[in-house]
Amino acid sequence: MKVLLINGSPRADGNTSELVKRFIGDIGNKASVEEVRIFNTDIKGCKNCGACQRAVLEKHCTVNDGMSALYPKFLSSDVVIIASPIYMWQFTPCTLAFLNRLHCLCHSADFSYNEMAGKKMAALVTLGDEEEVADFAVNGLKEFCTFFSIGYLGDLRIPFASKEKISSGEYDKRIKGFAEMILG
Image 1: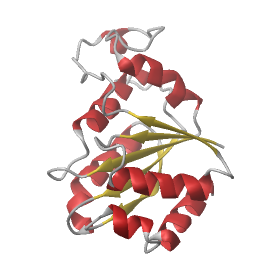
Image 2: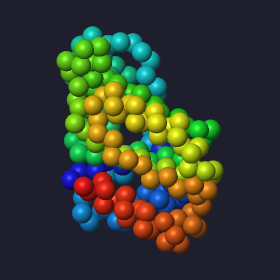
Image 3: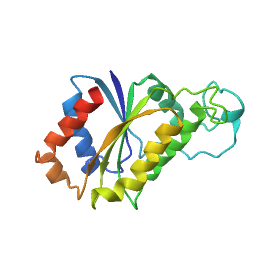
Image 4: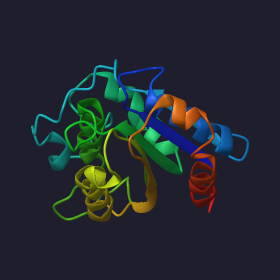
């Protein structure tokens, strides 16, 4: 199984990155996992030019930025894990831009072309509040998956996250269970 883990955290050594590290430790010897940190990658939001909806584009999108290198990674993966802290009830802006730009992989008007169909997706989420604060972001991801015929596998939310709590082993059972669920 090939897993692409999109890490949208701004901190290379923060809460989400610690959760990702623990998750990869549980799943890494049973699957091929590639983590891509996107916070410092130039990924512009969709500009709604419509070119991807009028024709199948060889490079998927007319915007030439850091996303161009991520399309092949996304398409060659079996499972995509979205890892992000929650800021103001939402994923980080770079995470949202990544998800927005996947639209070019599908002609959503008639679904005659959908390179996302059959993919599987899940989320790893850290937040400084109750788990419910992540509902807006996670429910949006679930709707995204439903619309584009992507199988949503679930999410793991770490409320009131701190790197110390995550690295202490307090969440190891939940992280291991999440990894096992991803492996199916």
